[in-house]
Length: 551
Picture 1: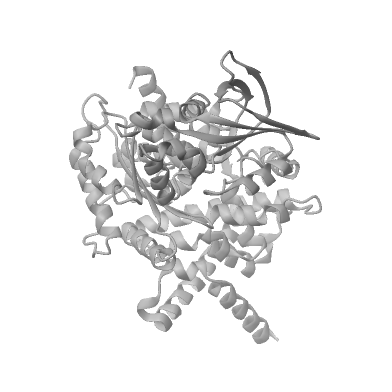
Picture 2: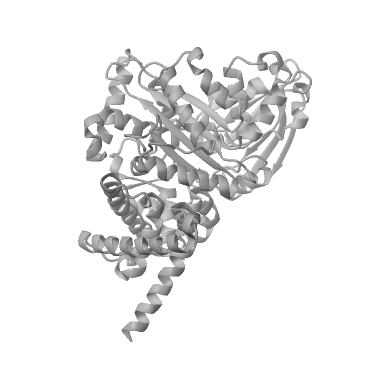
């Protein structure tokens, strides 16, 4: 890491340090580096990163666990971070890798995990609930990130991690500070253009405001497109969504590396679908075509792209077969958001793209963004668009959306179940022209989310309240149901009112948990409880009883 990069890293850590819990002040740089890494690689905000950190006694070499559930996948992200005052002295080594891998094997092997912290215990419970609920259909994918501002491990030090990857559902990544900055920089770029060479014949079609092109491209050209256009930026989706189904990744890998099947990759793979602002093509001297593309976005085929890129980086059989691998590419030129959405849905065959970014220019959503700006905050609908603003002034639109659905639509259990899923299912119903109070309501949802998360951070550290990370949206829902003033976004609400409502809601939820534990015995889990409609049902029952007793 260069001196300049080290300086930039320190500037980023200094932005985070004022917001970290007091208990971590003794290791503030190390802890801030973990939070910075989680925010940068997963695209989550500072509060989410802190609430999903597990750093401390009993962490077993796991500093953070983020569980990301969509309608089709459960992806578990595990972090081990090493910060060094002198980046030249140390980093991630064999012992660090082996310790983390051993803990991962304990967790996913169903073994009893001894001496774990309350945070780790709660995460293990959530992971095992997910496996129990969905394992028969699809096992969760597990991504392990080793991040450091120091030295990355040698290949010989990665042996145990490589053995873990061979099991199929695990993928291990190693990030230096330089690589994190490179990732951020590629995502920040605005307009970019790239030329790709296609093989032989093209099929072109123009209808109204959309142009289409069907072509055959080589694996080498797809890898180059991905690399030069900004890697994960061209996917317009965070890493956490595109590493999804490792069974699909494995099949892609096996086909691409097979000397018998590589030549048939075109027939055995669904190819990629690319949406762009503009394209044109010319002939070369060999009967092929050069396609010039402006701002390409891969809306389908992300796993194919990512898997081929990773294969090309690592020593493998792929170097013998790469010249045989070709695939179908569908290229679409349009700026019509509705058509883009339909292309995304219609061509999807792997993991569905999370179209938050594709909807980021939505007119109604932009009105909401402007309202946030008037209030001195920034609603982020494209990653890194507000990186120069203060870290505590940035709101992630998908997280605020979860809070909104809990407060104003009374579905906290659905909000918890799938961040991307509820966004996709409810976006078109919420962001409509006749939803006149949406800007104010959305901002109130953000205010309440931040307030509840701040209370949770204090309680989790001091009391080991293991249920709280699961209860965020349930508490927001209950606060709004018990005090209608909170839902009235046209009026300000004092800190005193919020604190009283929080304590009341938290107390009621504790009683609910106690009753459910008695009822369900060993079958009870926080994760299942807060993903069910039980909280909503019990609160509605509580309100009816209160009204009845008041008469």
